[in-house]
Length: 465
Ligand code: BES
Ligand code: ZN
Image (cartoon, rainbow, N blue to C red; front, top):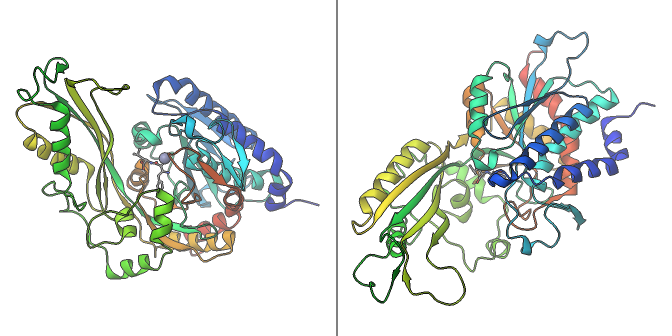
């Protein structure tokens, strides 16, 4: 009796979990230089794993962490030209686990509790692309033919802006050509409610350094006669956003595309409970730009956020000083049709103009990523929706999401292929936070999704045949 992919996945459930655990044990944190060798080890583990499951695999060097490129073997007797080709993108890098003391179990020693796997990177993003790998493995190992060629591009620098992958894409445009790109690195609004994300916010990063006196000064001897850099930085940052949440940088909203009434109506139909949302976030009240719902503000409106703020004495007790310097890390989330370069220029000009002369301000521009939008009525989106419905046995919803995946827009631009965002993470999966998890039912649905997805997408790629 030959096995089908679903039976294969059920029979190998235990081994699959063990492999997933091995993958999660590698602390591939991209933002910490001391984790570089771990990131490389992770790429090597992944490449070896791709080979083991029957993919032709290459480890591609970059100026940073390597990219794993793996594809299904040429189908015997098939003319390659006629087969549709899809690309699956994912990232093996993870966010730092700190603060470690808030984790119930070790972030790099996966544990199963309440029907989920708990570990850093479980849902963002190791579990999500691992599920696609397992789905393809199940086809290859059971001799179940795939209707298309599939290539995996799994990088190690998504969480720091994907700059090396963008360069790699530009250089390997021909090699990576495809009919569509599949990305599972977003979320679904609730358990059992699958989603296709048709828009992502972009991002633009900026760091501010304010300096004043040449060293920390006694705040009693000097206070009141020289400006305090921490105070100046706070006042400057406060000017960038009005109290009600509207961004006060001139020109900031110029390119923001209005939401259509139909889209706003559709968003209001999504399950959203303000009280549950408060509990989920722990915030005492919701906040944001007037005239928009919380859902609209978190997915379809731009933001200006301080991500980190540093100055002065941080130890126990008091220390009466005027700190010599203060700095802040800022990112802005962008929506169609805002451009990162233009927004960074507007923000820099504003901050320079508003900075008081009593301190020096230095700005360092960081990574940027354009927002993404795909027409949800397009044939590939419709095909993906049909596949989600089959895999989850539930009617999928259409979503805009607030997070960013820097390379998504580049895939669209460089490969001229639509990107289908089929997220498998749940709102309480704790991405970027302590106690990250990935739901086991979503792991299974993700592994089984391919059985419907690849045929549906292949039909959409060749509507005539
Ligand atoms: N998986 C997230 C992006 C995401 C999360 C999209 C939830 C939609 C919903 C990704 O790993 C991520 O965190 N991206 C960063 C990119 C940034 C560093 C350029 C982000 O959004 O902060
Ligand atoms: Zn992330």
